Amino acid sequence: MNTLDDIIIVGAGFVGLTLACALARLNRRIRVIESRPLSEPSYSTDGRALALSSLSCQMLTDLVGALPTHTPIVNVEVSEQGSFGKLHVQAQDLGLERIGAVIQAPQLGEHLLKQAQTEQNISWLSPAKVEQLTQENNTVTVKLEYGQCLSAPLLIVAEGAHSWTRTQCTFATVTHDYQQMAITANVSLTALRPHHAYQRFTPQATLALLPLNEKRATLVLTVKAHDYPHWQGLNDADFLAQAQALLGFKLGLLSELGPRHAYPLQAVFVEKAYDGRVLLMGNAAHTLNPIAAQGLNLSLRDISVFVELLIGVDLNDQNAVTECLAHYQALRLNDQKNMLRLTDGLVKLTARPELKRLRSLGLLGLDVLPFAKRRLYDYLLGV
Ligand SMILES: Cc1cc2nc3c(=O)[nH]c(=O)nc-3n(C[C@H](O)[C@H](O)[C@H](O)COP(=O)(O)OP(=O)(O)OC[C@H]3O[C@@H](n4cnc5c(N)ncnc54)[C@H](O)[C@@H]3O)c2cc1C
Image 1 (cartoon, rainbow, N blue to C red):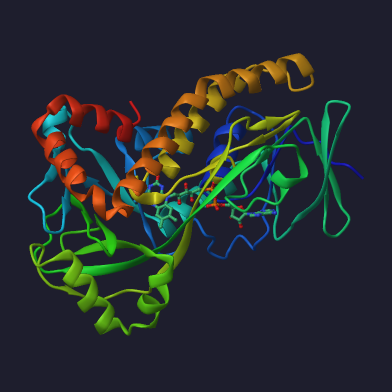
Image 2: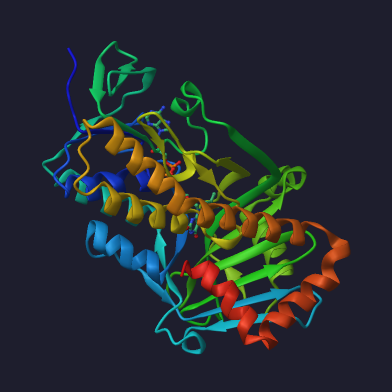
């Protein structure tokens, strides 16, 4: 028989778990359906680290509670191989104590899951997969693979970029394959500066280093898809030597390579993120290239607005639900489109060798023009 919850959330990645916690605290009865066993790491919670803006850290703290161990970022340096152009942003120039923080994905995942599991208003179905979705009489009903049916007035799809449930509604989904792979691994460096994050553009790859402590950082190496088999085939010593050649020696010697993870990069965008009583959130609604480390930051801003708008909404009132979803969409669309444009633009700029000069002028310009730098960081900080 049907179980009536207030909201069903499909997907227990960062977005699904954060939403579940925040909505349960508004006294909504939440059902979370997750396809993998909760004890197994997901795409969200594998070995990488995430750079979160100060605003995101504050939102997560407000929505879920104190953050797990994290490393503040006070300085970001962006450079280009073979160019003097350098974008150097310091928290104090922006009147901030820190620009953001680095959190290890497994720790954030564990923390969110633990918080969610203490909420009495959340019930769980895992491992479980949705097989069918229907909407009628102000209710969304999902049928699970073992035949069980669940209904609720609202369904939030937080299944990530390859969402199956998204395909069961009438969402106009635009996808773009960047033909790039991101390889992540933790590394040690002998001259790492504490609380400094780095990004370096080279013709072969883009490198980012997110500081974990005074010695270790997460390396994110983005390479062309057709170069990936080469990188994948390297043993640890050769991988480190080739990454070092791209990074240079300013930060000292690379060593102690941790396990490597790889991700094909694509953009996914759904302009209207709700259909009836089904709402897409997180990567299911917008997947960004991680070049500017903005995917989860953007989703946290979405969640924060949505949770606020849902306060006091009678989920059995069709007009109230439609108004709430439409209002959410109207408030969030600009930010989502801007982030897509920004990340897409950065990828195009790094992918075209003939734009090298323009790119370095751009970076130089940003360093010289505090206003432009401020504008870029307003974007990246989500203010
Ligand atoms: C290399 C890389 C680096 C990144 N770095 C940053 C960064 O520094 N800062 C930042 O803000 N963002 C970053 N991101 C983006 C960030 O990882 C994503 O925005 C975030 O993981 C999205 O979370 P999500 O919960 O929407 O989706 P996911 O993390 O994909 O979670 C989806 C969940 O749904 C479950 N699921 C899927 N299908 C079903 C189904 N049919 N039924 C039930 N459950 C299902 C999955 O098992 C999973 O648990 C990075 C991304 C990449 C690839």
